[in-house]
Image (tube, rainbow, N blue to C red):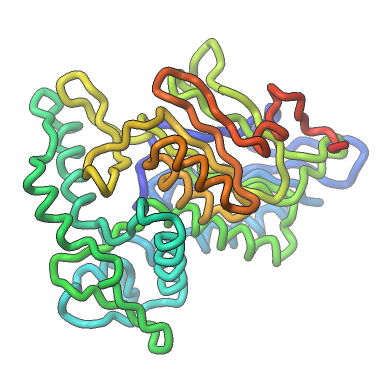
Length: 364
């Protein structure tokens, strides 16, 4: 699945976060938190306010179970008895259509739609290219002294089989067919955020409306914190040049928001070293090499799937083009960290940044 998260890129700025609970002042809600590590190859943490620990645990069981279900559906590496998943589709490329769950159909249609809307920088049909990079990255980590880049001729050959228009979706019959046997899907650029959004909406409909779900740094905040003090959640944005355990602090800034998502992409979330240079996992479909425009980009959007997809897309565009895309989309804001450390932000992002006077207090 997407990115075994070595460092949490977007981290919670909730100073009181801890396992267990803390009585919220002057109201009937208490804070609880739990985490699990068995989905999407990352840690998922949930923090929330409920009237009892029993109520929180009930929501948590549903959240965990749904993440487990989506993990199996969106897995590209493993088979599961009785389940047709993304791997099943890939295994049947050029052979036959595969009948799949609606959650897979919806994810693929979502990804194709946003591919067409954003210039094709993020392509879930890039599997043949990304699998080569995956193998070289794993080999480079296992044997650092012999780490190397994939040969360009190998990448160019694989790139011939990445036409997203040959991902044939039959919504009426709920089937997906890859029209060439060398095609494969890689949904790492969107699956975790998309799953997080599904879970968030479903659990809010169940009554859990004050909380944060963070799946490996894909952060989705639900309504507002019911601590009797704050009106907005505060989320810290990781400085790509600092460790999250740095004594100097690891945040570039803090943003404050409700009922929205924060997702970051960067050059050191998943990488290996070749001749002393970090080679990260965000591959530009035009060059077939890692993008080099930024150290990091953070996207804020209401929908976590959109934020996840756009964080990759905007990362792989030159700045003027990247900013123009973000500013053309209603309700989307962004922060860019340039290679020299300079920070650029949209006007809307400025308004929710601590450095520009924003806080968790009730907005004016």
